[in-house]
Length: 239
Image (cartoon, rainbow, N blue to C red; front, side, top):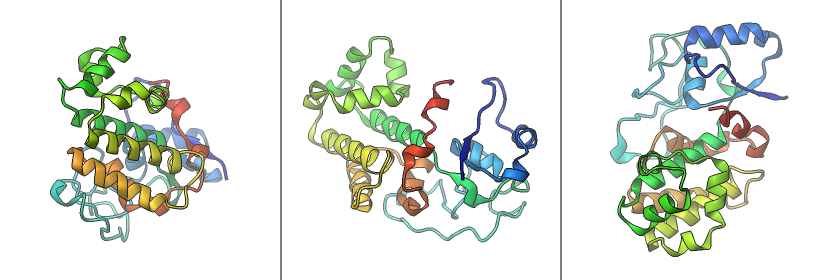
């Protein structure tokens, strides 16, 4: 069954009413497509309160504010229902949770963002990034405005690898392996090991762990066999 990306005008707010109007216009009740979108959009479609909330995952009862245990706790209680008034649910879901597809590009961008934020702003790796992408200011590099093509350029850049410290290099290699062996067009046979190595190297580097990273860690079996088939990279260029 084909999937659809959630697309809308840049000025449109990601509200429950807006998402409902879009689904009405495309006659979603009839076709019941799978939907690939940012986690905030998926949350709104499933009736969850978007933003930094305690129960932000639509699959489980992840305590997103308990950051101290995210690297160590992989399994969280599964959500029993999406009933309004319970566990961060404020509206009736507009789609079934099984129809939600995790956005591989957004997860990849989040991994890159967390990696860059963990770099020393005056270190050789961060300085190299500022020099390589001259159109990006220091503030933009620190805020991480990288997109898919820029990330792929870094993976192939041997000079960039040469300026990384041992911990940075380990995290970068793990990130590349997960990008190519899980978030790309196929799943490597050892994808569980690749994701665990990624989490270990990111922890050693001091990277933050967000909802997208935690979803990758805790719900890897929820991803399709071919993430490339539902990649939202083309839609992301509009932003």
